[in-house]
Length: 324
Image 1 (cartoon, rainbow, N blue to C red):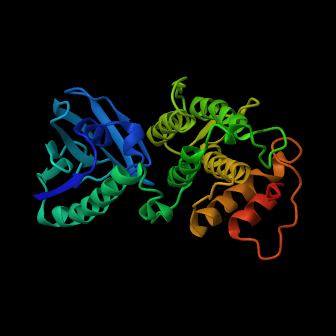
Image 2: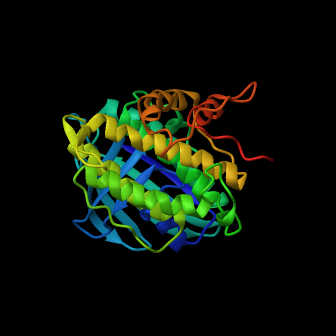
Image 3: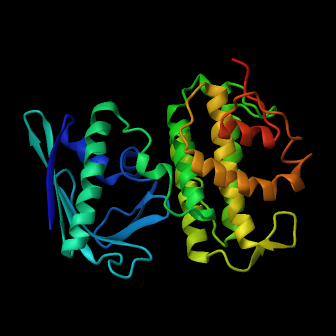
């Protein structure tokens, strides 16, 4: 069993929101989160790229405690709902005391989860103070990159940029001549509906909320659908016919990362992404871009001397940095 208590400098309602609401969870614990907050409802949290925790809610008392099953998709030794997490929130003089207990684990599992909970509860404390714990270094370089874990990793980078966009940033020009920062977010809505359709998933646009929340919610639907479908076989191509499923899924991380860079350039916001992820996406782009030049991509440009891996990837796709 693992137990830990932290005190957050926020009221009890905000503390409960931080541990249950997807938009708050993405600020300290998850890349993406789906939550059906009712007894018997399920949740699905991508904690780091390629690692998905899932289970069902067993007890819920708003503003007091929540109990849910915990396990990992694709891990036979600890499947979804195989263990139990209880979180209690209580008002104290300095804010809210949050106590997390994780039961039903072997000694080895308890040791591994202790490392994880210590990491994420530390990020929860930071998010309670700053509003956002910032990029999670555990998500920066996934231990095994494939088309779907790369989609998770690049989505994390994209969401970090989107969260920092201000109302003034939305009208700013990006390296894509036809798109402002806001236009690119709207473009992503359409892209994700198309990505979902290829995997047989109907993606629902929330229509309300921040740009980050809408993109994150739609992307979570898409990636969950692709994980359920898998990468074997073929899928419908946007212009008709079929394409390999792995090739189609590989378009997602290219789109997420390039548009994250576009919006970061337009808004002057830093883009935080590891060289390992950029290198993997560059390989995917080498398969995708040449056949789409003149439509989705411009001719390759020469990167500036000393360009970093992300700038070289952007140049390969025909993009130039926004002049400072």
